[in-house]
Amino acid sequence: MLALVTGASKGIGRAITLELAKNGFDVAINYNRSENDALSLRDEVLKLGVNAEIFKADVSVQEEAAKMFADVKASPFGGTVSVLVNNAGITRDTLLMRMKPDDWLSVINTNLNAAFYCTQLAVKDMAKARYGRIISISSVVGLIGNAGQCNYSASKAGIIGFTKSVAREYAGRGITANAIAPGFIDTSMTDILKPEVKAEILKSIPAGRIGDAEEVARAVAFFASEKSSYITGQVLAVDGGMTMV
Ligand code: NAP
Image: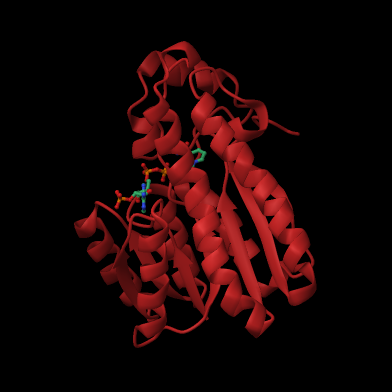
């Protein structure tokens, strides 16, 4: 079975790709800017004995997402994408009053519109196969909001509404759609935060520590498997107890 992970070159997407490969999936590795990271990930995946190829695309641009799906289909091990992981994401943090339209639009385009483009492209074949798994990476801030992230939290809350609607539309055709809401995970996205900001966030995590990308990846692997066949439209927080909603 083939899984496509968007934004797979780094962080959580990288960990998801490796976890899916360990679970026997062939993987299509999407990246945009980090080609060397994508290539090294492909090498790591190939050592696990499954197929892997890299696909450059800015998934926030519909035409690039469509070309990526066509390229995946035409690749030697390609065919139907059975598992789509909408993971690509960016932040452009600032307070509402300072936020420029471009800060808003670039985050919505990458975090939300890309999930729409990729999901629409994936479900065509999934519906024909009467099987599919769509997993989209939301965030705890999509559930509870965060000062300085009104663009990001709107995109992540949008992922949740989108996921639930797709789940309703496709539940009868063997396709599940679920979202993961990670809390504070150790990646380049959170590396840039100042030590005092990190210390403040840590106070709000009952587990008392930052999460690892692998801890998110294992939850994704469950939703990607046949074991989760009767679970759809759900949001699973992987956040060390941060939200408990
Ligand atoms: P990261 O380390 O910054 O990695 C982001 C990944 O997204 C990179 O591989 C990047 O690829 C890719 N990407 C960005 N824009 C893209 C585009 N237009 N097209 C294709 N790929 C694109 O971030 P991360 O922490 O792993 O985040 C992964 C996901 O988890 C995001 O959706 C993020 O919002 C979510 N999340 C993260 C946390 C956290 O604490 N880290 C918490 C909640 C949710 P290139 O470098 O190749 O461009």
